[in-house]
Image 1 (spheres, rainbow, N blue to C red):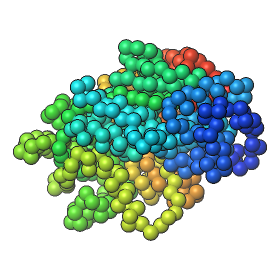
Image 2: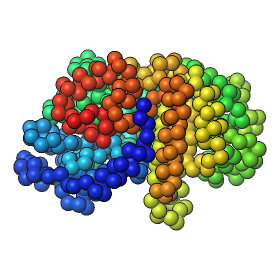
Image 3: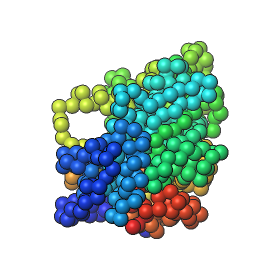
Image 4: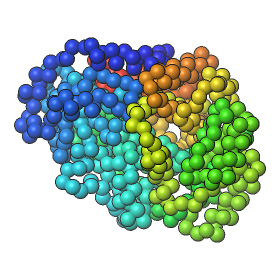
Length: 513
């Protein structure tokens, strides 16, 4: 099985540097209604040949479409579907892919942000009667949250970072610490509008056009571009009690996490995640900890090679009730005595915590150096967590300088709908493992890329059937193994039906042309 991400990135860099520019004569024949919205200038196209990962480059698109309506995108898709030359098309939201998944070399990248900016108003409509929000696929989740909070409501499931687009996360799954209770974001969707590869706008749901609805959710943009999603809402709590509990051994850490995700609402936490602190990694003076807490944690980190901390949160409206519930839960957990820390914040502050912390770090930084993000995200079967710890945390990653975060937290498989394209391990509980490395130089990202490949190679060698989240493979055989034969065959049939020329989302490297 080919896992070499680093080799792929280097190869694409070479292609970007040396490949001859493919003719874009088709640009002279685009429909008049969108001609003025296509920008083929080098300044425009260069921006869309790089992304948040920073580790992959490719030939730029021939043009960037800045649509002012969904119909503009439909016109483009109908046009490129009808021309002889193959013109790949990718929808780009906020540019947070990490391995070039939103690239369209020599084709067209659709700048979805332009759609959201058109006319100066948001395409977000909240129904208090139906308890749902209709949101344009181009909108950021922070924008959806802001609109729903005005009416005391909120979506149920969240990514850790809210400056991602609705269409982008729903094309993958959308995961975070609420998945164990509400499922990924794709499990909270009632209805979609999807523009297919032929430029047909189809409204779909679990009752109508089911194959496209379930196929597009987690479908990596292969079947169509999500232009609207109807998302379930719940009453928004006023405040959040936010906790971090520290552990010095994996068994107590995972046992407590699994205990917490087994607790039904409203007894347990509303959010559960966790991190691994490798090789005496210390914490900094973030807004979460007091100076005294930082000193205590770093003394503990100096004593143990690896620390773990469980991150939990409980939503509430009444202080008395939340105090009693948390006191009861903490009495059943096995963290290091005295190493439980908490903050009390608003619901908005909690959900926006990653962005707030990024702003704090950037505000204190004097460096404008480019930062790379050679990330690897895996779904790991519960039965192999101990093997993974020994081989990866204590083996491959022993003595590395852990620049970035390593996430480790469990999910319940029964919160995922297997009709959807998104794929998870075949165990009732599985873990998210996120290697969220940051690299300051090309040499650093190559080193982290090599580590990622070594991790994947270890899993293959030892029969650990991980599933990549935000996956990157280089052959259809690898993709078939990722999805499994049954789901893969269904996916192929849907691709033939809704994007028969394989024009959409070429940066995923799924369907050969």
